[in-house]
Length: 272
Image 1 (spheres, rainbow, N blue to C red):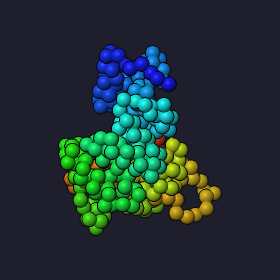
Image 2 (cartoon, helix red, strand yellow):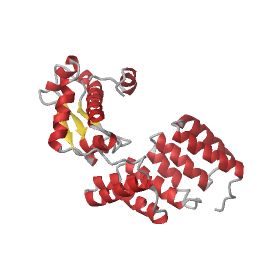
Image 3 (cartoon, one colour):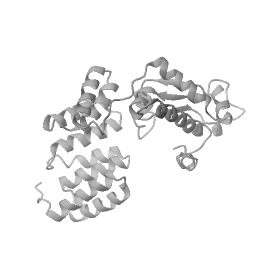
Image 4 (cartoon, rainbow, N blue to C red):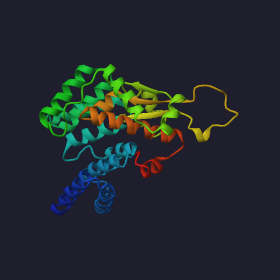
């Protein structure tokens, strides 16, 4: 089906939506894109920005559904990039790789796509390709994609131990029962154990039954563990002080989960 080209005012509104997303104004962006779609239902160029908003809303499946009608948009590179992002968020790393490679074939200087491919290839067990795309992202946009913090595993473990000693005693006492385990990245089966899947970029995770769900009738045994994901933490932090602080916050966040706190409770306590 052919769609008339968006007029100048509509393109200006599309740019406003992108600006709102850059500013973190996702709710406002949703209002604007929905208003446009009411006037131009199904338009491929509006489906593109609709999918971008859906991704910011953590609605990757919705983004994929929206993109099914956007193949003829004016920006095929952006179409493939957004579809790659949606697949990545759903832990479909092979599909994310394929669409990411299509995007940079159309437009090789997309720094955000190279960064996405770098993270994707890490999950696919190809550190060489991950490094190549990470280098490309830094070459194109060094401010947005600085080199990840490089710390050896022994040094990382030492920083974890230091961070744990700085926790409040009331928090530390739970670590005798819920050990902190360092993994390179979350396994795909962990990410997809929930629906929608957990973000591949998550820094930490509590796996097990939180204390509010347990009773005296439970069979004794290890109730769970708190996982820290080294590669994601190193990518997120810029120096050792920030890493130490982020480890401490992440552990406190996950202990909050095992105590039965939800995300709003954690945010109210400054642990989100």
